[in-house]
Length: 623
Image 1 (cartoon, one colour):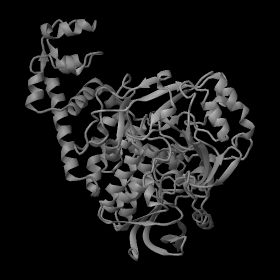
Image 2 (cartoon, one colour; image 1 turned 135 degrees about the vertical axis):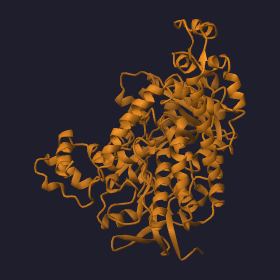
Image 3 (spheres, one colour; image 1 turned 90 degrees about the vertical axis):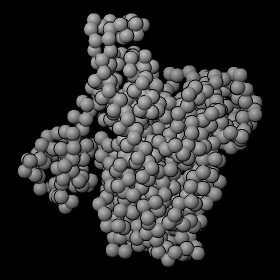
Image 4 (cartoon, one colour; image 1 turned 120 degrees about the vertical axis):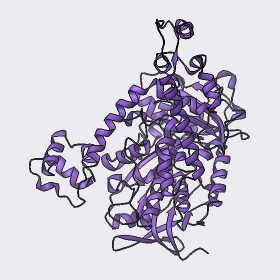
């Protein structure tokens, strides 16, 4: 049936579970992926898209580490957009609209081709824990699977409850049953659990829509891609999305159904995602707005199914249908399925170490929505990190942790472990204090070498990164050394109303001026020759331009990050008793004893711990 014992058992095959299984198996561990339905591996349960603001940076980080999410996003993309191009490169965020069926198919194919990885279809109904250590899992049929480590990535399935109007029923996703048993086992050994909710909009028949009443949303003219590898190519053709709006009439229809909404009649008590609210939540919270955007997103190349982004709801299906029929372009809409809300169990992530291993049970890891996050990308990166650390623990090697100045992944995990979350956590660029360093374009510079040392990123990936880094930095140095004469530069400067040059100056300095772009600099004598003789591609040229235009900002953030690292180096013993530091505030002592930070830097980020408390701690530790 399967092996008697595995190094790593991954429970759940969503985005977190798929990346966890891939990471552990690729690091040489005998791995088993257990899921209730093998047909739904890496299912896009909600919107058919990957990336977006800050999330796109995470996908590129996963790819730089040797994960699969970037490659699969490229092969299943139907549209590519680089968001925030009007802002600085720290804000640029890639996003793809995906073919839902192709996405899941490609993920399964890649996992099946991954050595060391086995599969089994059944529900895991319990955990086998002995002496505060996980030793296996139990299935609903009573099978016991031994494991040296276990990664739980249960998504919305733990005691999942689906709500549509005044109806509710158990389920982890539309058409799939909920998972039971695991929550009780965890609570029995001392874990604290909570409930969260999320929602999804109706899916409709695209043949019933009138797109002439909507605004077309095409992809980029020159599309990019996620993966740093040459295995994938940018799209040659793309499908458009469309945009339309709700209206006061739509809002009135929805309000009439509020008394039948589980959100407002008290049947849903858990907290939903603040940054992806339901349509009833939006019209209630933003009563002054007379309309809200709806994005009409195709679910694939060939299917007629359409996702109505922005219309997430748990209202009765008749209210959903009546309200959508009043939206421009939806007058003759036909439903494939109504929207719904789902409540599920999660475990406050302050119960985890930075490796995503639980503090209470050795060799047990949590990743994804079980930790209170929302979003495929947030789940996938946690899964990858949990898979890596489960593999390292078995090999008796040090845990792998990314700091806040190394990756968005580091920011996300540190936020969860240090601050916890009482509502579904979503990543934003504003959460990263070093976002100028954590750009989507340099994820490979930041992470590929680290991943290669772990045995995850391939040598091909490492060499490609090193070539890009060397050539772009060589070009930067060339621009610092090469001068341009006034007669060559001034015609371009005048075009942008920039002060003319009176004497020759370094190209780097001229390039640093506002509005001057790479296409302008290429006209300066010697530049095009350098580019062609050194075989610089577009990615290298973009990297050079960013390094020139933002060199001051980048250096400033590096200096700030170095200061942070000095506090990160001040480690706190794992058994440190804060209650004996009487000069520290009571709240700080209570929070520090609960979270048990591993460094002074982490302690400083805990809510309720003041700078004065940190000063007292440093004095007490003899610093």
